Image (cartoon, rainbow, N blue to C red):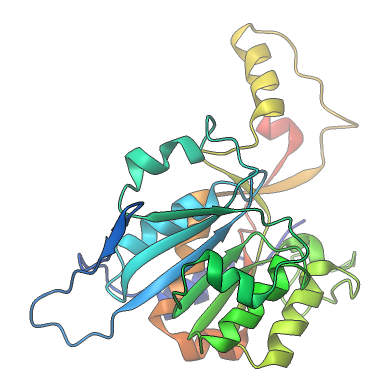
Length: 284
């Protein structure tokens, strides 16, 4: 699937703010807020909802790293699905690479979760900025997150959707105006958040890779063959095209809306990838 790179360049140019060293420090035993002396900036807390792994598994980690450097954010909390494997990346690097980020674990698969139970899990805290990198629809924890964002009067709810939401068409690259699958859970999540009046910004990434990816089992199989100079099996002709985006670049886009929140909310939907594509043969 090819997606216009214009969206990527436009959002970076419009939203990226200068980096600064003011950030929040928190840990498993409490939290501490640090403010830069003489700063008049409004400091805010951020919540990242992170799934158990898979294609999006590294994004919460990379978002947290980016937010620690953002001058708007004083503290970062990751609400982590407890079905994750703590012995695998990126989860095993939480303690060493983002030690100042508060980690709260819960079952995000609990369909009985409500906004009240979610707030209890989070210790009654509220958050000005929320990144949802877990929900597949407005049910259970997905609905609870949207409801909490409304009750907290959250300034920005950033949702990690998927480019798979688009209907197959003959138009390539595919702009954000491409018709979507109405039945897709991500589309229903978008609609529910908008109906609630939550300031939603929804990003649609494609294939993601990174140093701490959590979906490496099948990739390791290919690399094992490469280092042993064995042939790589490729389906069909090998001319199929694919777009690949680094997880750190995706995270930079997901946090870029902090630079111009009103503009981000006005457009609302953003492709999150590149139109630089490769054939399977070229990747191999």
